[in-house]
Image (cartoon, rainbow, N blue to C red):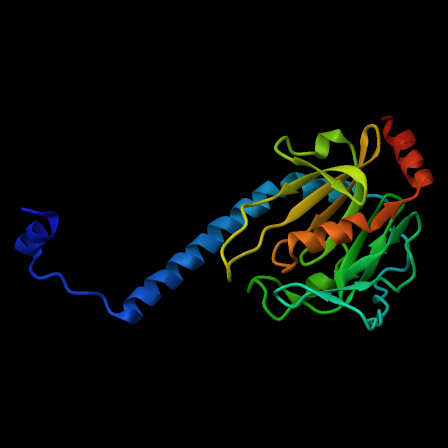
Length: 238
C-alpha cells in the first residue's frame, strides 16, 4: 500500500489546497526567510559596521545637521534592471578622496580625514518596514548608504574573493547569499589595496537594488589621496 493510500485510510480523502491557501503559505514562508536573512546580514556585517563606527569616532568635518547639496543628474545615466541609475558625481569632491560615479540622488553626507558616507536624498520607495525616515539625517546610520573608510587587514573576512577593481588589487565580500527576485538583496564590501597593510573599504548596505557590476563600478571610481593613506598609516602604526 502506498503512502497516499495509507493517508486516506488514516485521515480520509486528501483535499487539494486552494490557490489562495498556497499563496498564503508561500507569502508567510518568504516573510520568515526575509527575517532570517536580515538577521544573518546584520550578523555578517557586524565587523564592517564596527569598523565604520571606529572610522567615524573621529571628529566629522562640516557643520552638524547641514543638509546635503542637490546633485543635478547629467544627461547620461546607467540603469540597473531594477531602475537604479549611476550618474557622474558632480558635487564638491570630499577632501582626501575623489568620486567618479554614484547612484542617482546620492551625495556626500559627511566625512572625516579617513572616511566618508554617501547618502540618498530620499529613501527608496520599496524598503524594509522597520527603517525610519530619520536615518537619512543621521550620519552615523548607514542604512541605504555607501560607506567609504580606511581599514587594516584585520577588517577583511577570511572568505573574501580576490578581484581587480579599477586596475587595483582588491578583495570582495558578499555579506549574505544573493536571494531570489523580490527578496532581500545582500550587502557587499570591497577591500581595495591602497598600501601594503591598508585597504580602502567601500561598503554597500543591503536592499540598495544595485547590481554587482554597478557596485564594482562605483567602488572602482573612488580614489583616496596618497597623503590620506600616509596619515592613516602613521596614526595606526601599520
